[in-house]
Every structure is written in structure tokens, then in C-alpha cells.
Image 1: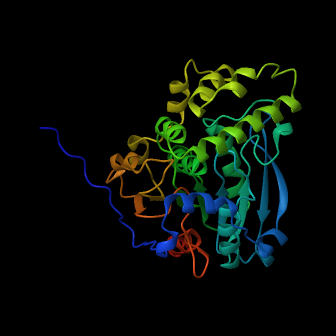
Image 2: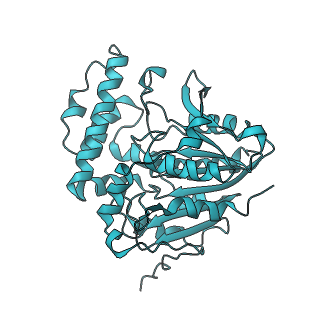
Length: 334
């Protein structure tokens, strides 16, 4: 008889219980991208920085320090795939936490947020080295304060991998990492994008095609032929065509290159929290079952509702993720 896997657990005292009218998974997922958010305090304090991330790579970010250096800590916010530093969930979380006394740094991954011109090489999700180099520089902006990472979707995947990299090359002031709906199995996520609600495939395919066109416009000699990628009908076939721009022979090789494994998480040496939803239509909740109990440093907060990076309630409108992040960070003062 095959031994049953342990049940998925919510081992943090976090609970998202939205109004019944806001529980639909597609409402949660789609509304999170289109509800307007104002972030006056965060944006007023923001200043652009270009980080040299090694091997000539330049990454753009926006640093919002607290006035007079009175910071409770510095938080690095990481957007999702094809997202940007001004995404709704980034601004909502950033504004809330800035008002709570934290400094905020919003980083753009390569080619995101209109930064196609900064690097000749194209973005890949396995580019952990440059993300970690940027992370080290960002943490050093406030070395005497606790440093936290919050990432959503692909940004959550990067957050988990950065916490794992910290075990090998410590970031001195690393405190908490929060990964929201992270893609831990990119192959499963890609399949879900192609087979879930058709709106998601259309949305991400349109944005990825636009990224390739913009990259070609910035470096026409390096990307002369992107026709196969533009013509591919699914994210999986686009990924297969995309492998010609990297060191991987197949789409599966590429997708596996940035997977997050239980073995990686078993090596953690800092607090990591995964927040996700059982009804996520893009990142299958079953992917998190193997992570239960792998490390005392890893905490799972799996909610019944929330969709993909949603966690929005109505009457009144609120972004629960901001409240959850505040609760998690509360015990991380130096």
C-alpha cells in the first residue's frame, strides 16, 4: 500500500475569510490586477536606483526610505512574471507597510517595467545570480535594520530561492521571507495557464509577445527572428520556442531549472512563509503538499479563498495580504 502524503496544513494563525460575493476564484485573480490603488506616501518617498548585478547586468529599482532613518526594517518587494513595480499588489502592500514604518524597495527583474534597453540578454526565470546580487546590495542600504523579502507569483518563487541562497551566502540582516502564491513547479504552472480559464492564457500570452517585440526593438541585431515565439498558441509552446535563446535543450529542462524543491526548503536557515490559496487557478495547491514539515523554518498558510495573488475583500474594500504581511513581520524587530 502506498503511504499517503500528509495533508496540506495552515500552520500559521492567518485566516482570509472574504465576503461571500468576493469568494469566486476568478474574481479574486482578475480583480487583483484591475482595482486601482493609490500609494501617495510610498511614491512620494521613492527614488530610482540602477543596480549593477554582475556581468554587466543592470536592474532598476525604486527605494522608499523612511524619513530621518527611522525605519522598522527594509522590505524588498518582488513582482510576478511580466509584472512591474507599480502592480496593484506591489503598491497596495508597499503603501501599507511604508505607513507601518518600513522602508520599501521595489525591484524590477530584467526586461520588466519597460527596462528592455538596460540589458542585451533576455529575461529568464532561472537568473537567480543577478537577483541575489541585487538583493545583497539592497539589504546593505540599511544594514542595521532587519531585511525582509516579499514576492508574489514568480516573485514568490524568486523569494524562496533567494532565502535558499541565503543559506549558502548569508545576507547578514536577513529576517523574514514571504512568498505569495509562488510557482514552485513551473511545469505544472505552465500547464495550468494553458488549461485554466481562457482569459489567463490570453492575458499572459499577449504580455509575453509584447515583451519579445520590445526586446527585438531594443536590440534588433540580437533578436532578428522571433516569429516562432509570436506564433506559438500556448505558453508551453512559446516556452519551447524560447529555449533557443538560452542554454536549455527543452522546455522541460528550462522549467525545471527554476523549480523550488522540498530539499531546497529543508536547508533553510531563516524564517520563510508561503501564503497561497486552495482555489488558485494558476499555481496548483497540490504542489505544496510535499513541503509540509520539511523544515521548522518553513511555514505554510494555505487559505481556502484568494485565487492567484488576490486576497481581496469587499464591503469595505481591503487587501488582506498587507494585513497578513504586517502580522508576520511584527516579531522581526532587531
